[in-house]
Length: 263
Image 1 (cartoon, rainbow, N blue to C red):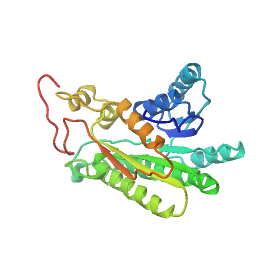
Image 2 (image 1 turned 45 degrees about the horizontal axis):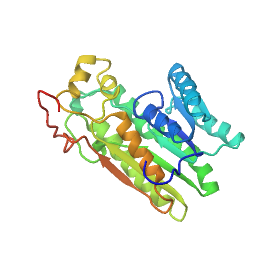
Image 3 (image 1 turned 120 degrees about the vertical axis):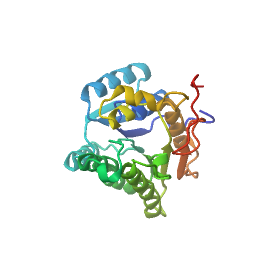
């Protein structure tokens, strides 16, 4: 990190924190002195992460087993935070998923509903629950993890694309609705990042998921966490509204240069 550490002592709430980009953000932020509220569906992973970060960095880490699709549970979390006088300085809306890769007329409606409920409605539920706490204090930063898929549509991904276009629109609309406040809003929109993403998309097909990342160097979760650190650490008069980040081998949603060596 360049310059002063403006993250130290802040409280950051991260959804989807048990793996991938969410976990990498938790580790990077804890290393810079942030206190954490970590939410995910897999309690055992959260508990292990909590113990690791508290021992390594001496920060406060609270964990909540939470599915962002569950609106009453999200609202209960916000009420619990408010009751205990905890107002997150930062909300990282990271929870999200892709399911299936099919032509629209052959897609699974169940997959569509789960993507929409997680990527769009889950982000809305969490933001609606937490943002009023920030508005009342007139400070805070919302970071939405979007995707290159919210900028460019690709075949067989129409519904996932639609959810990420929605995230992009919500990010921009949120920023407009917070006009006159000191609350900042950012969308980080990655290209190909090697996480559990493809394994989830292909419903556990490990070989098919592995092939997505063969022949080039994809982004790592730690790369996105480093960018989140940068965005959060810029001076308060600076707001990075939207940032697209791709691996060097990828130039669009459709173009990835693959070589036998994978370099």
